[in-house]
Length: 82
Image 1: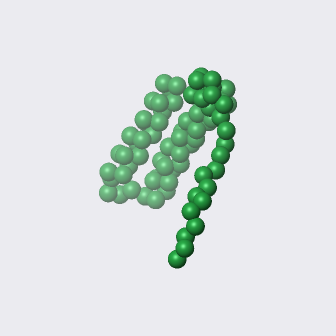
Image 2: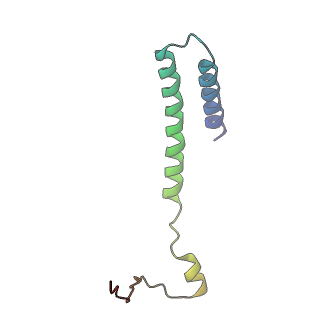
Image 3: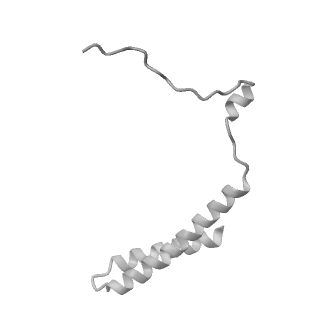
């Protein structure tokens, strides 16, 4: 949680500092960007795990109201006579 947030903020700060330099090398930029991307993947992992742990909510508003939900398709019966 907080450790990941601090780590990401540090990586962002490092990348911003690097971008402010005139003598930045492509390798330095690549290394800093990859470090930040690795931390961002950790966020994705945490979000994915949280989504898997939470039961999926389906049609909660209709179920709360006691209504039966029916899938339907809108059909336009008008015929174009051009």
